[in-house]
Amino acid sequence: MSLCVDIEKTTGGFHLASKFEADRGVTGILGASGSGKSMTLKCIAGIIKPDRGRIVLDGDVLFDSKTGINLPPQKRHVGLLFQNYALFPNMTVEENLLTGLRASEKNRKKAREQAAEMMEKFYLTGLEKLRPGQLSGGQQQRTALARILLTRPRLLMLDEPFSALDGYLRWNLEMELTDILKEFGVPALFVSHSRDEIYRICQKACVMEHGRSTPVLPVKTMFQEPGTLAACMLSGCKNYSSAKPRPEGGRQIWAGDWGVTLDCGRAVPENITHVGVRSHYIRLLTAGQEGGGMNVMECRITRIVEDVFNMVVMAAPVGADECSDNGQLRLEMPKDQWTAYTREERGDVGQMIRVGIRPEDVLLLVCASY
Image (tube, rainbow, N blue to C red; front, top):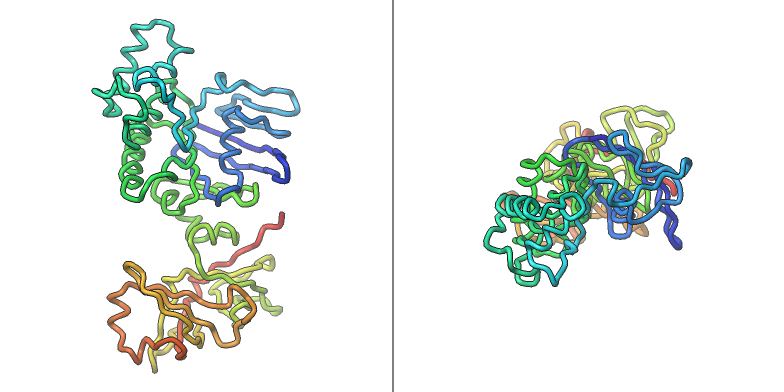
């Protein structure tokens, strides 16, 4: 599968400018609510018409504003799973599945046979006469997926399929969905605002912010080297500061919000506007402990929070910009690691501590301008 999207759409005060390419496997689109993720899927499906641009799937042009091509949804052969699954509430499971076959299979007997085979694969046998309101969340999702896959789509698009579910059910359905995608081998776009879902389910991903998409990258690359401030924040990084490369160039950069010069361990490009550091990569240094090549910062503890499995320490670096929302650092460590320190070593609120950041853990970021 080869999907090329380069479209623009203005609705009210919102401007979508989505541009990315995706190939086989599961490609994620990570973004906050209102960033344009769902609108992008609806444009690909033909539900929304872009103002300009081009959408090409496997060499077939689905939309082209210059040539006037705009295939109707039924001719695009793509499947879109909505957040609420969009099952017909007055139809049974079997009837819902058959609606996906009416356009392609006129033989009723054959259509029922195909629906029965799909119900067996999706563990829906015995539920044929039940309506959506009588099904669990997992059964509803499997019904919706079975209906889509009966149409043999060239591309499956999943629009935050777990957003309305609780944590336990979400995890179970995620495992089921992952198995289904592997079994059927359908190329997919997976939209989510959850970095964890994107990391576990997708092989590649891009980020959407304010209607703009970043290039598609391997998922691990996107988390290890997010590249942009938006991708860094959406991937879960809690520490970031405005930054300027040092005038003399080289490996050092000035982190303005933290009031410190950092060694980044590699050459700093001139266009870098921010730096980031993940909470788990900030080390607490005890008295007399050398930095060992790390960036060492003196900080004052402002808050200590006990999480379910971790301890969270908020600390303000000496020289930090007190007026900045980003002027504090967030350290996280497992509880057993925290309790291994003595009270004097780990400090308390109001006390000074030293922290270390390895040069290779400094994320170099650019802030896209819109």
